[in-house]
Length: 194
Image 1 (tube, rainbow, N blue to C red):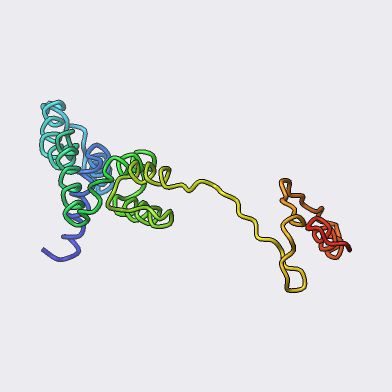
Image 2 (image 1 turned 135 degrees about the vertical axis):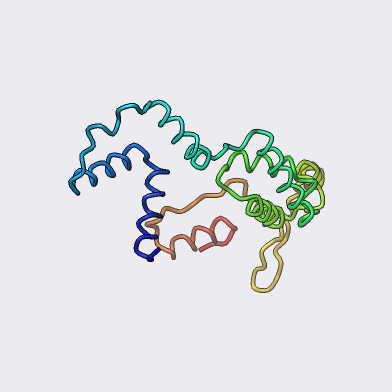
């Protein structure tokens, strides 16, 4: 068969798979255009039988089985086992990873893993421990806030303790205030006579 005819045959087969009724109409129109009569073509032919034959032959190829719930579960289990074999250090964080994936359905598992790991590093958390353990430990280790004030040095000397003024309220200068005024106010607040 010449290549041109093979191309036409392949195109016709594709058309039959995608739109069998439309393709048959085109074929009949071409028959009429070439001078053939199609008036008696449907006599004695059961249209339902033809439709069943076409559906049976083309239906199997066209209809792809949708994945079942078991297929989704199996695929998820395989992906999870591959992920944990590649990143075993993620095991303590599986609940956190699952929440992140649930909250961000478009993210990939690997992306969530690396973002969480970076987030732990930024906060100084231990990646080998769960988030809850890290938070509990950081709350226990928070130092009690003791304020030690170092007295300012005046001309190279430390003033006596009686001259040191503890500031309880911090004032913020307005943005239009001149820098010199701000410096003078800060010097006055620290006890200098300016």
